[in-house]
Structure formats: C-alpha cells, structure tokens
Amino acid sequence: MIARIITKRVLSLATVLLVVSVLIFTLGTLIPGDMTSVLVGQEGATAQQFEAVRQRLGLDQPLIVQYFHWLASAVQGNFGTSPITGRSVAADLAQQIPVSADLAILTLVFSTLVGVPIGIIAAVHANKRADVAARAVLLTIFSIPVFVIGIVLLLVVSAVAPDLFQVSYIPFTDDPLGNLRSMALPVIANTLPFAAMTMQLTRSAMLEVLRNPFIVTARAVGVRSNRIHYLHALRNALPPLVTFLGFQLGVMLGGLIVVEQLFGLPGLGRGLLEAINNRDYPAVTATTMVFAIAFVLINAVIDTLYPILDPRQRR
Image 1 (cartoon, rainbow, N blue to C red):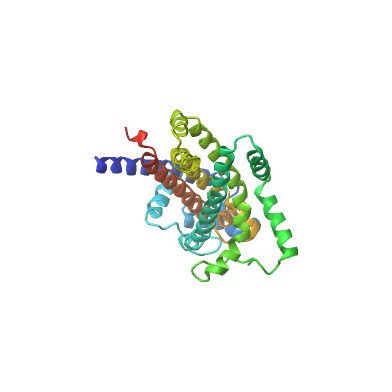
Image 2 (cartoon, helix red, strand yellow; image 1 turned 90 degrees about the vertical axis):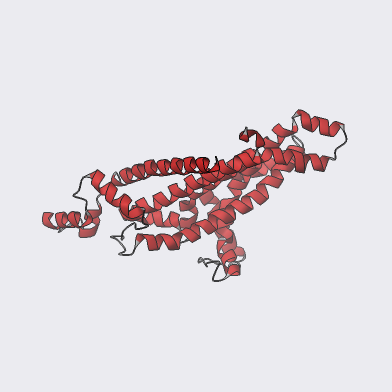
C-alpha cells in the first residue's frame, strides 16, 4: 500500500517536472535576441561566423532535438557551459543554491517566529486594541514593497551603525557569526512582509477554530484558556498554516531576485537576472529549472505532511 502510494507520488512528480521542463525550455527560446549575436557581436560579424557559432551550439537543430539533448544532459546534472562566462553552469548553481537556501530558510524561520505568535494573540484578543494595533502595523508593512524596505534599512544602518552589519556575503560554514551579520539586513527586509501574511493567516485560522463547538464545550467544562488556545486551537489550525508556509516558501524563492540584487548576495535570483541580461540561455534554463524543482518538492512535502497534521485527510 505504502509502496504504491510512494510510486504514484514519484510518477506524479516526474510528470510535473517533465511538463515544466518543456515549458521552461520553450520559453527560454522566446527570450528576445539571439545568443549567437552576443557571442560574435552585433557588428562586423559575417554570416558564416554566425552560422558556425549556431552549429557549434546546436542552435541549427530543430527545437525538439535541442530539447531532448538538453534534457538528456540535465538529468545527469550537466547543464552545459555558459557561453558568456565559460564556466560550468552546474558549478555556478552549486555556489548560488546555498546562498538562496540560506536566505529563504532564515526568512521562513523568522517570519514564522514573528507572525504565528502575533496571529495567535490577535485571534485571542479579536477586535480589541492588541488585535487592531498588530494588524495595523503588520498590514502597513505588508503594503510597502520589499525593495523600499531594503533601501530604508540600508540608509538607516549606514547612518547609524555602519560597522554593525557585514555587507558582503559570508558562508555559514566559514564563519557562523559573520554569516548572521551578512544576512541580517536581507533577512529583515524579506521577513517583514511574509511575517505580516503569516500573522493574518494564523489569525484567520485560529478564529475559525475558536468558533467550533468543541472549544465552547472546553470552556464550559473549565479548561484553562491557555490550554485551549495553545494546545487545542493551535493544533487544529496547523494544517492550513503549514500549507500556507509551504506556499510562502515557494513565493519567497521567486522573490529572491529583488533582495539578492539589492544586497549583492551571489544567489540564484541575482544569477538569473544576470543570465537574462546576458542572454545566457543555459544559465537561464538551468536556474529556472532549479526554482521549479524546489517549488514542486516543497509542495510534495506539504502534501505528505497534511494527512499527518489533519487525521480527517486519512479517511
């Protein structure tokens, strides 16, 4: 039974990723401009030089042939060599992925630590001063774009405490404290809007649970409020909250471009933006595929966790 479920889930994931790979490769070919012109130059190049480069890159082949050549190499972890930098695309991704994962995980952790407790307090004190104040502050922050928050943080920190935070990225394995100093500002800028969303969803989920008859019964028989709020209500509010956090992590990956570019982090988002500007098709397709795989895997994990958190889903 379990083996059949796992097999079905793996086949489903493989099908989704295959469809996504077709879309990514096809959309990559629709990017305006031609990589050949980037390599040989717009001016002074002959038609023979253009054709020679196209043949060397395999661009003279039908699109479907190019796709299967790319797919066969990609499943082996070979995304080719960047014609712009001359480096292996897989090697560049291996350096960029830890940076983006570092930023995404820290953002998820801190937005959860901030958003969930405030959401619980807001639900418990619904429509009272604490609830109104929390919603007003966090929803105001949510309405401010991330790049504006980041610019304000940079201006304030550079004026008040320029030596407190590290500007250039330091890997956690090299210097844990230096890593926290280098990631503090990007994480704060990224955390604030996601914490606001987490707070709002936690509040809504908790309010829905607190209206259930079993909560009313627990209050009637004298169960303490803290036990009702933090054990019974929060446990029943977890399934939609976990689903949202998984979706939030996927959205967060897509928003890395802004934060990484603003703070100069050498991650996937910044690498993707540079690859698009340079018409570096191997890097664009490979980086986009990494984002797609991460998004699909996150959703698979959420689908697996949901029946564990909500026993009704096992029936």
